[in-house]
Image (cartoon, rainbow, N blue to C red; front, side, top):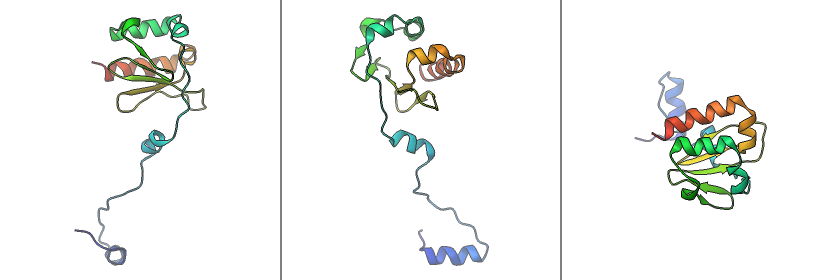
Length: 125
């Protein structure tokens, strides 16, 4: 049953609280809807990084199984996007899409490495 704003205000004044369907976006929705600036990927540079090779090994993939696009890697189970370095430097998983800072940035940060391993362990089982 829906009510109009006037009825809602009257019920609220009488001390009757109501559940209201909110059409506002949640903060995570806003992050997902913001256009991202993804890095162009050089697969040769990635394969020279030990962390990248370790991730492939942990996920059971080989270089030959990766479908390289200009702005992401299609690993079959998920697409991996690399973002520009930002003040947030966080790792996100949105609808089978892994969004991370560059491998170089992750390699420099124990916190980012830990976050990446935990997320991959949780999502790929």
